[in-house]
Amino acid sequence: MKVRKFALADASFERSPGQEGDVFAANLVDQRHGGPVTIGYGRYGPDQSIEETLAVHDVMVVLEGRLTVSTSAGPLTAGPGDIVYMPKGEAVSIRSHEQGAVTAYVTYPHWQEARG
Amino acid sequence: MKVRKFALADASFERSPGQEGDVFAANLVDQRHGGPVTIGYGRYGPDQSIEETLAVHDVMVVLEGRLTVSTSAGPLTAGPGDIVYMPKGEAVSIRSHEQGAVTAYVTYPHWQEARG
Image 1 (tube, one colour):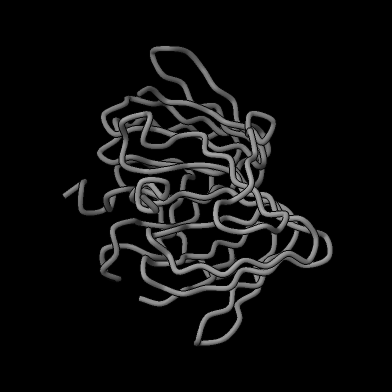
Image 2 (spheres, rainbow over the protein chains, first blue to last red):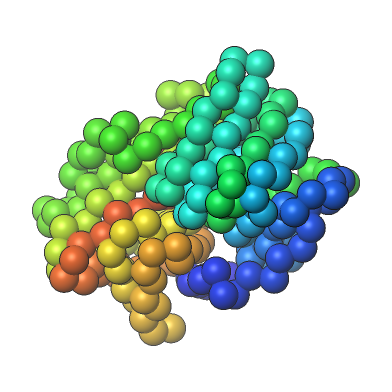
């Protein structure tokens, strides 16, 4: 695969698997492309919440809005330009605030394969 | 390692190795932390340029400013919210524009180890 550039306008959002809220993911690079990481954009509607035990190492960069990530160690709130690192195996709750949120994400290895 | 949140204010920038321009990197998570990926922030002064053959897979999210990444296939210009994927082995030239740039990066595996 060659060097590529992606913009939010390139993203085809789909509802995140296993939940019914307004939380969407759009993979741009994944197992189809032969590399080791999945890259994409995430979009959260206002006041949405998802719970997940991470099957992969997940790095989330907040581009717009605000998210609170809670673990047994407590809550962390991230806004534009902030990075949240969620290592494999951690149990998290991710909650958007009233303005929703847009993120960029990178996972290692591929999250769709890890979910089976 | 637990879930962690980072902000630009947490970054300790150091000049990128092997070049003399105003291009700086600040690792936040790397080989010291036991995981598979390096995470950090990059900062480019105005009109700077670096050339590199990638020793690792590198994902760059532009947070501020604008960068042009050139390869043998041509130039790609990225602004705030855009993602540039640079697979291992690619030869790139990265040039900042007049306003400089700030990025978030994720590499697999650790770039400091790959450089030896």
